[in-house]
Image (cartoon, rainbow, N blue to C red; front, side, top):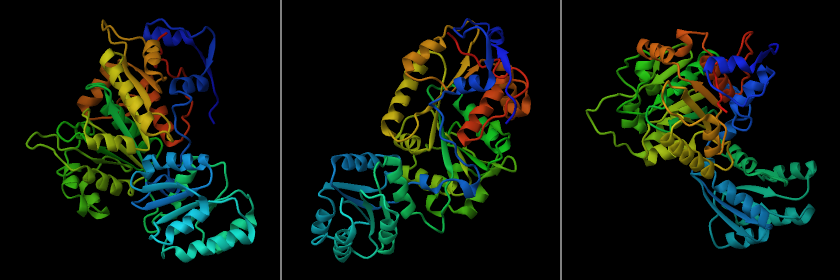
Length: 452
């Protein structure tokens, strides 16, 4: 790791020309970076290579699951897992009664794809009951046993007898979800990349610019293959931002979702760099883009299986497919500006995502274009208090840098390497991929400001 260095808070204030409640004295760059990025906002460390991306974060397929619990706590655990985005396609039923109730139920009805049974039994009594359960189960039914004994010998015997998995409390919902996902992982298609959804709290907040630059940093600096998908079909700017004018793009894929495979996808994407690909939007108004929600799900699933990271540039609209795409993404980044309408919308998005994704980190908030001359704006501190969360990144208003990049069809990192906004975006990109950002030898985040 690079050696840390110190700088004074006055440098930040001088660059931003604002007042702040940052205390006097030296700051450690690593600590300040963590403060700006938000301790609790970031995801867990994640691998970036295709063969290392955890397959357990893939959605569980459309299966039926029936759980038979002995304890109310276990029933609550399964219910919470059933509400997770990764189990959205599965049909989950939860009953009490444990192993004996499962045997009685399936005497008269066909078994689902997966049976989860909780039991406090062990030894021969447990094995005899499981044999009875096996006799009433259909061929191909998987069984997960939740037991009380943390015994490796018991575990091995259960595996030998055909049990899919044996779990011992305490268990959290994500552990259960990943266990189920591991059972139904397709061995022919074991890999699925992570999806990063970017949405603006308000039109003009700069979400697309943030998304495109984060995608570029992930590909070029973190050295991870990445595909940017521009989902703003009539007004998307990804093609302009990367100086690309592809003949085909995301609209062609959405128009024929059942035909999209690796071969067709390779023809539809535009290669921006060796590691960065683009599925651009047509950006035309010659038709109304009314596309079935299932088409987005089908196409994005194919894209996920082609690269470790997929950046989704969502439009500032609200429809069923936008909502479902946002809630099903692995990470959500909301870009807002320090004004009232943006604050209201950011809070609505923040609350919605947190409520529907209780087993995921909260959405990350980027506060953009802070410090526009002569524009009254909500102080960062007040914005955070009203939102109920700290932004992971605060970016100052730098019209020359951002305007030059947009007009030249370049990314910010191609225009300049001196801006601390660029360094902050690189930190966020590395955080989303679980890679630590290197510490530079001069004042990092000098222009990444926080108002008091």
